Length: 306
Ligand code: ATP
Ligand code: MN
Ligand code: MN
Image 1 (cartoon, rainbow, N blue to C red):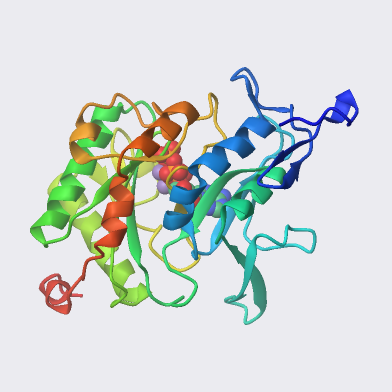
Image 2 (tube, rainbow, N blue to C red; image 1 turned 135 degrees about the vertical axis):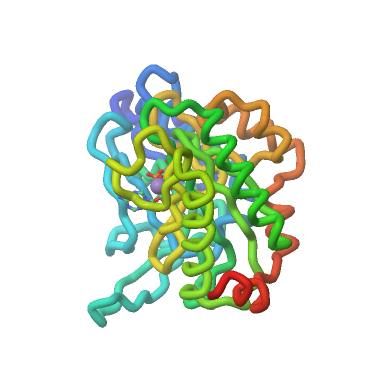
């Protein structure tokens, strides 16, 4: 509820007992969507989102003045960051220690919204085993001009390759242009093995269908193709959290879908905030996959020469 005591120019709201300043600020110009609406969305979606995103180190995309204004990624907690957001020590390549962040509560999500966070991004490991991924993400990035059906074929191709190895996967439409094909794992492998596996998958596809896929991030090798971005699968790299809003026009949301549902979608950004909330009425394919983590066995890795 918007309190009436505060002056008009800075209306405050309160969600989950967290004060929301500039409650009526239009975060997505033209979409009729205020900062308070965004806080309410996170309160509603929070339980499901925390089950998926909780206890993974975070990268946050903040746009304190709304989208279209300056936005920046934040991976480390500054002094002024809300106490509801949990902290962890992250050893960096230079030997120094940085203060990372993770979520454990709906309040933490809402506190982030108060700080101008729009997008939540996750590392592929949980905080208690920083060296072992619990999920691998194949980030399918179409070249400009390639339509969504090309992305969908790529996603199905990745699914089938994984299935041949006995691994089930879940597609997440990103709210942008592509799809993240996700594999939820038991934590038996280290990051190096996860990375090698992902690289092998990307290179195998690019080798099989050189006109359709590339495993190289170079833009000039991407012409008319889908880039199978396996580089998300390393410590410190992130992928957008399921149910995160994207800081793009129209406030699209990253949504996990069933494979047969993906076949019928026209774009990666067809779900908005209202549709995301509606999906709380049915089971989440990503959450189901998390509840049945799979083993990427040593014999499979050996078969791939890893
Ligand atoms: P799209 O479907 O439009 O490609 P996307 O979320 O997959 O959307 P990418 O550019 O492919 O966008 O990036 C993949 C992931 O890499 C993002 O979800 C994000 O987690 C991470 N990422 C990209 N750019 C940055 C950055 N500058 N800082 C931190 N993380 C980033
Ligand atoms: Mn992508
Ligand atoms: Mn990418």
